[in-house]
Image (cartoon, rainbow, N blue to C red):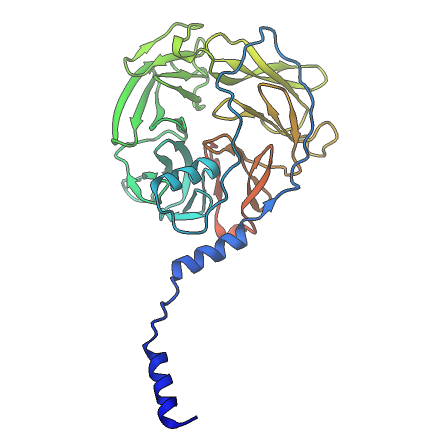
Length: 375
């Protein structure tokens, strides 16, 4: 090649600007390819009708569940994209990292003891810092990955929350009774409180259930009570606010001599059974999705009595799971979120999605949302 032509070609090549790869995008792509597999055969559809409790209460707002969007490996360009991914894949923690929306990792810098899912994002309670003040952080992690340290001072081991509302609630216990607090995580201020009777068992935490402007306090001396937290009004035992009618909660119905335990999705206001299920001896805990549409019934350890299934509350249709998860929770939009061995999965009637796999002790403890970490 003539020298002048070679010089010209090299000059043209040098003039071409080739953008350098985005390291963050490359890492995100690698994580997604490594962690997420679509397990299309993880579920086998089956139709079986469970016995319906008397009353035949219908579950309202039973829209067909849309197929979940694929977990994006690109940057979230809009807040709506991030919110959709959060609703679909939820939030959990691995060590000091909050995994929100499937594969977005946000480092908190402290081990986490509890995760609550709200409409504004995930709220995490950290462990106490080993200092003279023994401080504990309460952090809001938004779907887009931004964080805010909240001013709430919380000693409780767990929180109540709703995936469709920006509130968390907890109870401060005293010998004379309890003081319930409700906190708006968007405005970072207390928006409600109320006094409740002492716990039925001293030293044992009692669960709270948020339902709109009302809150159910279980484990209370004399029976469960509803608190209208905006006004502080405590309703008598057996009375429920009108606004909770038609909303479902999980209730233990008793056990048989054969070791079978019965659980039911019941109307919060009336206690009327909408769907009941039997659980064999040695099985894990039954749970109800936040939207009240799906029951998770764990199988017995050896699978001899029954396998783990998802139960459609409206129809009773069972979908067997090939994946056994423990502990188990839910995504904001009602997908089963759980830890299967060293793998974090989200399961629906249409199949299971692997979010993280190959976890080990080096990665740190996995904390699922709305599950008390006793470790």
